[in-house]
Image (cartoon, rainbow, N blue to C red):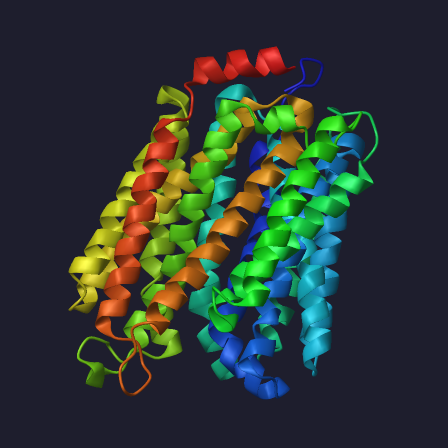
Length: 470
């Protein structure tokens, strides 16, 4: 926090405002997934075409987040937050009114721009909170991403059953409107600025490689992982990444400073974020699908979409509770500790799901443990990034961290779906072995994530590296 600026006089009100904006984005990210078959049927779309409803949102968020973070660092975080919240609202309105697939996809892409809310909010917290409250504030805001995602899956079934798919967007739109007004009234404009201009060539190349990578990941299970289109997209993504790095290294004022990305505290945290994002979103996909399997399969519980959502409620509750504890641990021992702890606890949860899932209470227990692990990990990631970079790089650095989470979540959901598709019964439903392998794979990813977390430098070393960088 700038020495010339006192702490925000009403920090709780500020944090509540930022959390409300983040909750709206998180809800819209997950509400659609369980209702996708219903939306597909109502719009008369094929499964492949309907998948773009989710893919467009992910692409919009991934492309807009680092660019908006950089613009916020340059011209003011509150200003860009209002733009992001406005995009979230406009996209929600388009999607709520959509009766045809192309318009729905446009609405979802515009909604994705609202993903910049999180990195911008982290920057606001860094500007306005005293150092001793920084970790707790970021931890609580980070928990909103997981809690909102879990609640979205829980609420999707009742909303579609009692109302219609249009209300999946009308309800969040109301939250967005309140968040926009509250941001205008209660969020101060940032004083920390990074003067310069935007490297538009860097922005185009960043967008291009993200589109190729995420499109390849999202469609790979349908096209075939070894198909010409999938391999072509991955090859194009690799070539564009190389071109992007070279352009950014040579730019006088880069969009994303490669020196910052090479800081040990940044790249290790980003790697852990990617791996833990894999596990978090795999859980959101696998657990509901597992409990919805018919009892006749010999392992499923025959749950409805609404009932399946209740299996994730303990996960959301544990995330919120643990995020409060995570901030205290970070203040006492550093944010690296809850990140490592979160990865290890998540490993235990996935191992339980792989080995003991015969009774509902076992799944509820694993869901609770999973929520605690995700709560610890996600509450510390943004703090580690914030502590590793200069103040004027906060927005773009946390934006790139969000991209790593999006890539991980896309990989997790698609690879898990591919494992299930490779283990089918004669009826076309997944075998129990498919779920066991998918859960065990997630546990392996969490172990690698724990190793990445252990490689994150200590608080003293991060501070020294940041000072050298600045």
